[in-house]
Image (tube, rainbow, N blue to C red; front, side, top):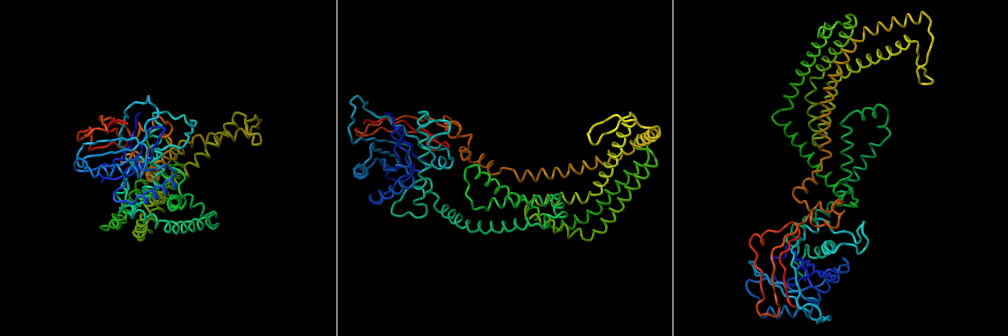
Length: 571
């Protein structure tokens, strides 16, 4: 019979004691969960194991003894370890021993009951496998009792033992928390025993986060109720709120904060990952916003920006005036309608004059406006960028007006030409039937329609040129705002927590739906194996055989399981 013993890497260098774990008879596997150290009272140990069994529904028991000494075990210690088998009876009884600070291992497997089958082999093969207890627990690779695509008992034999290990470690978390903050009468060594101080701080933070999250959630709900008031749904306020990027980003940030400070527990790993990604993106956003705020308020940069804004606005207005003067002449040698060209040019030049006057009127207050805009970076870089997009929209409002005027005039001419073209062909648009029908026109209608068609056709190039120029200017402004919105969306939706786990702790992502879809690839894709050696050990001999591993083999461990040795012993 091949017996597999799964031993945690965190217990390799701990002091001697008892092996606490679970025996899986279906797969002939022993899953060691912790090492119980001396001294202890047997009745207290049995009470602790009974509490763990009741809470986790896992058959936790004492599987054997663990000896970690500087030299060969003394005779008194050996007798003491053998005597513990009578206090904690278990079949079979494991005895693992390792030389302290060395690479020598020995193993003994004893059976108190004689084998009932006389044809059974005379020796047992024991495979010792190291596994990282922390990564196995946090990876959430343990599948449910019955996989969705398989019936009960249909799990392949090659993965059934590993599934039992995952399930055992996952359901035995109560054992790891038993002495998390207080050693108590029973002292255990497991993956959490090395970070007791950090666990205390994490537990204090977890308990304090409940009331804080409840208070903040109440405040956020109050803000949401105020925002949903009917006053803000009236036409002017609702229209302005739908057009400003800052209002959209503030609503988006309110949803993020509501998700973060929600007291509802995540139902699955996907919701937990979404919440963690939201927390990471908000923290990054606020950190970048504070960095921008410190840069703006250092060395009077806001004053320099305010002083440079008015000359830049004047320069842009001057360039627009040169462009309009070029259009009012003979642009690119094109023959334009002079009367219409002069009317449109003077109309747009008057708008630019009004805009320059407005900028100079607001120039004394620009520095104060920029100072308050810089304070918005405390809410995050995305809020500051959204506000910058709105400021660009306000500063280029005259370009937007030029585009709207040109587009409206161009569309009116196109619709007029299409209607007159139908009149010229003896057709008309039937409004009731939504189709083009034949129609008979008299001579006066055809004459007037032909004159209007000719006039609109010859005026179309001038209107189309103005429409094309202002459309290109509008596209330039929209491209700048689009880049700003792209950066805002990138910060809001970047999965920083998932990327960090992928780079630093990829085993935390192994418990996703894609990792659970195939039971046969449960460990090969996320954890990996490597065989290292074999050992023949006979408990009846005076000197058990030992396995000596190289320094590279014993020093480093894979992220998951490592087949350390194959131990062979007599029953």
